[in-house]
Length: 380
Image (cartoon, rainbow, N blue to C red):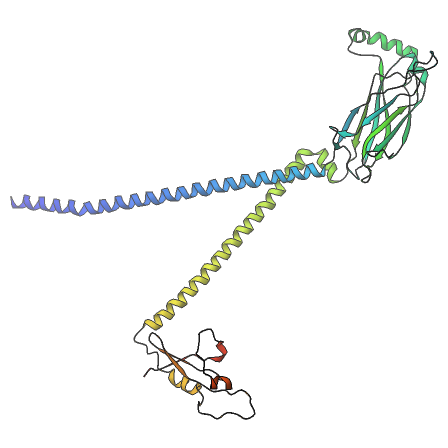
């Protein structure tokens, strides 16, 4: 009976001994899980911040490249329709057209913005769609003249070029008509030719007289035209040529360059900020340690504060009963002053002038430090 009771008591004591261990283990597990959750939360916040910064830097880099491309790249090409007009009030009924066909073409985009950039060379061509009619074939060569002008009406330049229809024999015209007759009958094609006239090969706009329009004139009163368009093409060289010919590669390289540059600036700024913070904390720690050492020195009652200092101070104090010097206008005397501190007495000496000897002044803490020497003297 006693053995069974002892076994029960031993089992109870074992259970009681294991209980605190299990409780401590559970507490440690909970603390570890809480620390892990806090760490994961901080890491998630850091990742979100890093992703936001990366996206912000990417959009800034993209905006910088877009701004550069918009401001640096001029208009690559511009197409303006040409509508010719002519006089019809002729005195002779045999000539329905009394003047050469003329057209006034605006060279402003949307009627407001300049098409051509200063210093950029442009090629200006006129494309005419002319029917292969007997009248046009009998014209032979004809002259096309362009006259650009500024907003004030000043003539910037004049260019004249000759053009004509391409020659086609009667047999070739007959064969072409027979072969393409289904397309001609269905209206999918027409018997016409496109004549391209290069008016300017390298036209550069004047910054003092920007071009806003041009007058076109064809020196052939009987010419027949279906449609006419004025084309302006920019001749790019250097970086502009690369940006225009390879837009995707240029955009990728430009955005990545801006992204790298901005990222480098951010990383260097962050490192500099951390370095300054560490130096500041190190200086603050050193100052705090010095202050703690000074406090421990004054708070330690086992170290006397007046030993070994009084003799030095007494030697440093000159005789206050010395006579005045005749060859000096300012008299210097040592005036020892003892002021009670917490656990010490501070000794000060002041240089007294002749006026101060006659009229004593009260010492203040704002007086120049050159006039005082600080030491410790024993209080009586």
